[in-house]
Length: 271
Image 1 (cartoon, helix red, strand yellow):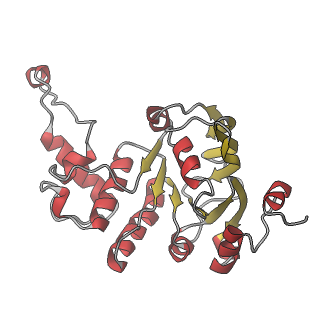
Image 2: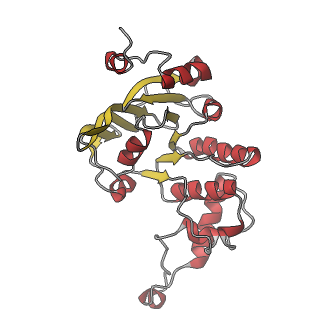
């Protein structure tokens, strides 16, 4: 996937030297990553590498013990999920947080329903279903997401359609940064292709994406850069065009040394 970022572009998100301790347990020793406008960055690492902890910190679920997060060059404090959403960050987790008995458009607006413009209707907290359906359809069309109907429950939708619906929800609420946690896990080949197309289409909406994934081949298809974590540290970032799966796997396992002296020390590899 060809990057749309330039050398002169300023990052939309920077996480610098993030640390997180749980008592004596060090979940993150030194994690850093950068995300540029309209860029897709893969975040990879073995189980226990710290990916999930960093994801939760960027999502506002966990507060860092140390380090700095900046949006558009300005430091931000993310102490709760709402802080992250206010900063323009939306996270789509594996469970998608969809309600099976509700329709597609109702899930898009879940928890943020639009009240009717009619003053009397607003007194009774009645929602504007027509407006919500129209706006949901508009967003889904912009991402070329195909669902049976926005009026039927999501229970009968495929895993790929459900994943695309959750991504569309992030776009509807004006998020500039979308974090996807294993977006193609347990999906078939066709569904995976649909989700990857939607992720690529987010560029056209001026959205930047972080994908946490174990699937190297898929990341090599959709990502611009890949950041590798090992033992609670971000040890290397590679441009997809200048690397291959074997190098990324080697960085994950320790067969290939990381870039920083700290990473080399963590891997017990002499500088």
